[in-house]
Image (cartoon, rainbow, N blue to C red; front, side, top):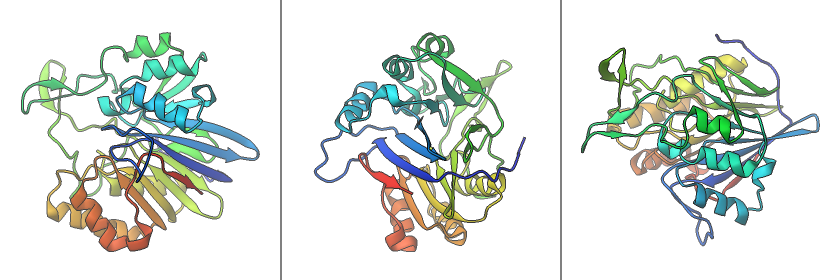
Length: 294
């Protein structure tokens, strides 16, 4: 269900707590994964929303300590999809938060079996220790929906993203089992976060963009009723994409004309290079330790 919202935030601060790379001379630890802390402010109310938790809770908590971010300050969590490099250690993080009924927003299919077959059979979805019962026991309250979900006025999730482009794809060979049948996994649980900033436009925060970054942008514009994209930050999953897909994605993003773009994690060097060529000073590679203020 797509319900348009005109609510806006007064301010948004995005802190990159975990990412594949780190800033120059950084004291922080990198990891294959991503975790971003959104401090969303509206009418004096600030909500701290953690988007994904990476795959190494010790590294994540270590970075948080260095950044002087208290786990207890986290008000809610959004999981962008099932993969271990976005969800592993969630129960541990919830225990460190130390509250009951911490909202955890995700797609209802997030706990399914999700696996690769090369170089051999391996589950890559939510791991043991972070299943539904583990999350609930650690203090999480699951909000599982295919629809767009309001975290607060001005900050929503995309919900399940409609696939409308003809050139975007999941980005890797993933499988699941449905009704006893082995089948390709379309990663319908891939969701993103949209912040609508007063007088700026929307900021789109992604995990891996398995739904396609252009599809995500189009849905975000539709949900918010605004055509102005202020910024895009997160993983675009173009690391194994063909040159033609990278080119077409970059050209379509150019048409959407964001003020800035910070791609990282699974985006891949070739895609980052092409995006830099197009966006120049509006582009920056995502790195652990960055703080983006809107």
